[in-house]
Length: 387
Image (cartoon, rainbow, N blue to C red):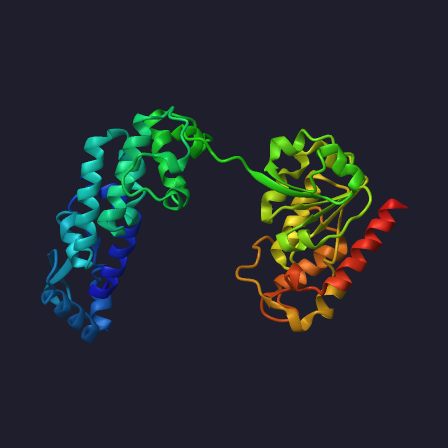
């Protein structure tokens, strides 16, 4: 015997799964929910519950309840509710308290389907966006999509777009949806990224480099602090034997001169592009010093996947435990159970951090380590590499 509350719970599941399909008039109606009417044996054994269930459906409002007559040998003629029928999606939305969201989403879907018929399929999967964003946001999506689709070879930078109300930060956080729609409208392959699909120019990835050796600085016009696109740094003739890679800019700025050495300031997962620097690939000693948390160790593993010679610097258990008073909390630990390319000790540390061995989401940020200690270790690593 399915109660009204249970029927509504089932309908909510159907709503979440099928609401996108129902946009634009899809689906088979009326939608039928069986009420699991009992047989005579069950009704007789639980007569009070049977009567309460039947009364609940007699008092029901919302959709149509179909009733069926049963002639049972012991209980005689009984009329029982058999199914709940919803004639259309509007009725279901009203029953579930979704009328406002449903009407907003359907109106927007219909408008865009008429304007861009090719978007019908992807929009069916974006009900929450259609239902919940405000009118200003939705209009901006439409204006941006219309301009980019009409000017797919503009070669403009994002800040140059002549779209009213444009905020380049707004665009940067919505390239996923816009890219999907532009690929669909243009019939482009799935692997086409937003920048290719939109025809916009992307600002080149830039990397900051400090040249720590006066002799090496003479090879680059005497420059000691360079912030330039990857391809320009890759073209340098820079025979550095020692390369230090750090996460934090101020840490990189704190380095003093070291013979035949450079320091790269590469934030986060940008380190994955460092193997594109030919002079780095052939360096004799490469050291990575990142934040001592799960993401820092994951970045180390991914970097070592491209540059097997990389050694970690100040990313060990002893360093972590020696700075307990300076720990902070890692916002969202890395999800992977196993990180490839870590040493046994590094992976044990990753596992302990992820398992909260020393506390909840323990993190030691790179810049919190005292510079006297850090510089002594850097000098030691440089000397070992030079030897």
